[in-house]
Length: 356
Image (cartoon, rainbow, N blue to C red; front, side):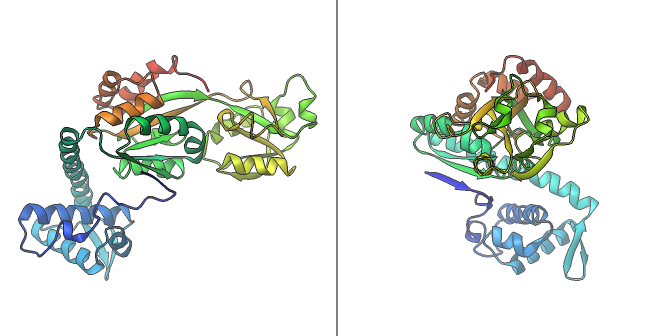
């Protein structure tokens, strides 16, 4: 089973309220878990109880009641209110939510441990990634992984790099795979996978095909079609032009390299895309010009929430995607509590990374 979604619904949180309910006479433990799930989801939904209720397949009054019961029992407000609406999270609420995240994460880990011993080759794997990774980097990996683990359901969720990192940090996705914005989430264990650079795509007989070497000044003289800022290493492109005192004439941006190529074919401008996005057979009507001498390389990472229990097939997926990542290295890096020290340890892997 392979499910692809552009927006992530919290399917693992609660598939039905009956999982935790029946009545309010359940044991304290069952009640507390439900309450923790509710306050976590409300916080994730920017204090919108209606949205949280929809994501958890329950009722808005039920969530409000359980939150109020928890606050009454604790004797502190988790959320400050403005009339009937939640206004913000209180300082006490911030601390409670931090602990709730850990408790619910450990609860999920208990389930994962049980599943690992009960059915090691069966389960779910949720991957949040960008269009470029899903379209060009992952197909071969997914094919190989599914041949080895036919009973593991893969769920691919596409979004912007900040959205992807947030899904993994919140535990809504197992892995995040992206190039940009991942370093801003200290709760993620970020493992470098490979280096990549860019190429220029132009129609045949374009003026750029006639010179022996293309420079940034040459590119700045033409309209450019490239990635939306924040996607697929776009920041490195802007930095290169800025460092030379040049302003690129970007006339169209898109998150999808196939869209970029479409508008290059229409003559809207020259395309600047990731090398991996060029297909010699499908794109033979376009001329590829190497641009690795113009832009600094980018690095794709795979990340997961620190403390996540990794099942055997999860280690195997990471190794398939990035063969230099073995279980021993992954565990060693994940055990480092200080984010700066983790990044320093990962830096030792950078020199040996493959280039695509």
